[in-house]
Amino acid sequence: MAKGVPAIVLAAGASSRLGEPKALVKWSNETLVARSVRMLQESGSSTIIVVTRAELQVDVMLECNGATVVVNPNPEEGRTGSLQVGLLSLISELGRTPRRVLVCPVDRCGWNSDTVSQLLQCKKNTSPVPSGHPLLLCDVEKVLTLAKSASLRDSLDIERVNAPGEHMNIDTPGDLEALR
Image 1 (cartoon, one colour):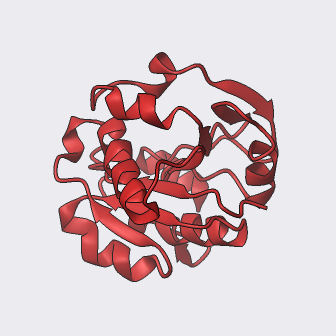
Image 2: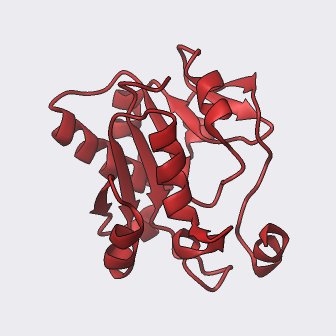
């Protein structure tokens, strides 16, 4: 399925609106970060990088068996900055720049392995409808040149494809209550 397609899980946000680390939120007896890693492994992702913040590093590492956990030293600079940290780690681990990468924000958890299968049939930057994530990123080198605060949505051409899943965004206590 996703053999040879690496993935990056973005889990470095401050979670200020939620009031607790999103990566460590439990859903059906597993944390959101563990769920992301498990589902990527089940989809056959070859290499998985989880980007987190320094104060969560140990807790996230304990939840991410089989993934490499790296720290974004400046996560407040933006999500694209975290993605760049993950891409650089991935390039270092692979010894090359990958042509395609799955990008999975930990708080956008409405996708499943069928979503990934649908995305992997695409050859361009692609986001699934209705879940919105993960993103199949093909413009890796372009992302590395963007400002850390840049919006991928505004900086890249992203195609949309119908795929299984539902739109979920865990940002507030109300979103968390709806998840549970």
